[in-house]
Length: 120
Image (cartoon, rainbow, N blue to C red; front, top):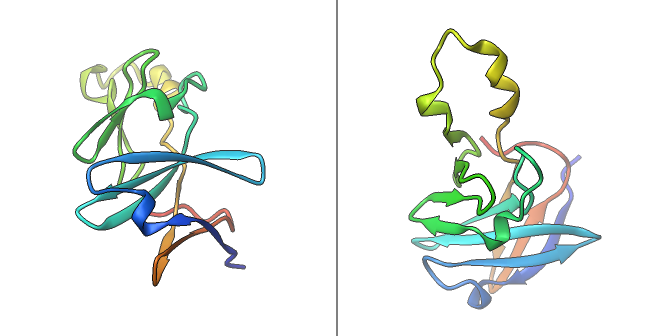
């Protein structure tokens, strides 16, 4: 069941920036990339690092703790996935994707779907 919740105003997230919000005790990062909005868990899936204190490079977010990088649009781990040898499959446990949420824009409001469905 889809459950969209108002989290911020569009005007509060400038293009090329991210903003942290807390909704029902959960920290989220809202990101505006060319007027497309994304909502992500503010905790890095690697070791729960503070992604909201990380760096945004276009559509890539980097965790400040271990420099893990994720695609903002899909949640896919980009680094260190790209440097792990394919035969070391046990390392996959450290390459969990980042939790992403669907975002809907209604006038000047950003709404996020907390139904648990991953945005892909």
